[in-house]
Image (tube, rainbow, N blue to C red; front, side):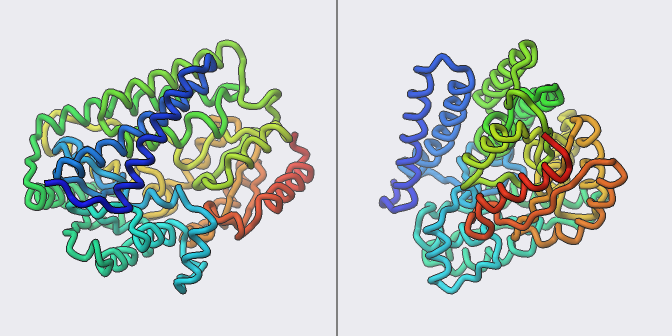
Length: 427
């Protein structure tokens, strides 16, 4: 039996239709970038459509997270949406509403936005939820909000327990936690995990990760073929959220790669001419980036060549036996996926990525945005600054909110970038 309609599923239904409309409109264009962006919108529409379809049919669906082996849900034919995806849809009205509720502005917008969407019933309550206990303390605290919500308090939740270190014992421990998660999902949804199906999902996903690696190698080219608008963090969303281990996602990656190869062969870059190559050492802004990033490219010839979510630090998953599959999924979730890699455990991974990217991508300047919600990363700044000095690359330290542009306005940030570029004689 189908559930009664609610605002959350109505929103998903509207977004599904809007994404498909954007796709259809994009296909009328002869511009490859426009068509590729439209194809991404189609993947988003398909993801929403899977939730709506399950809801309408009265079948189970879950809320999950990209760092907790979403391949398991796909293999069990459980449609899912990312529990914290609302952070990437933050807006000023949301922040005003949270302030009226007494929610402190010091709380990361990831959690404020999730609270907003929950409080206003803008996400459908799932059959079950997979919690996230890392990379920061705010994640498990948000679970308390979820468990006290009138529509979510009876939703069963399982949260795999992450160890602190990133050694072999940690991987084995988290692999056992993922097995417990699978058993939980079987128990509460009535679905069964078939290991051959899980292997097939992982194998298809590995095709996406291989194409992603080829693509990020192409971003080394001078000029860089794509800036903020294309590729980059979209690779993360396709492979780990929208189309985990699905052929449609693999097709999108192949088109992305083909498009970038054409640009490199013809010398087309995101900025004409390209003058400054930037490494944005955190999450890229969401609500105000669509204006700010093109301004960087247009006014300064500054291209964001790499960022946290675009970074490819993934090792292949061995599917030769069951244990190796679970360990590969555990390793990826613990310390290869974005944010988990940078914000948990020791500082080595972040420093190693910094050194590799600056050298491999001929970075002219590192941007340390100082996102107010990433307080744990502020302790790393001294190490990062000294590493940049050793590399001979300037670093711009900022304080901003990746989602709320009132924290530091885009105009203030533009002024800071302009002063920095002039002081460093860049561009």
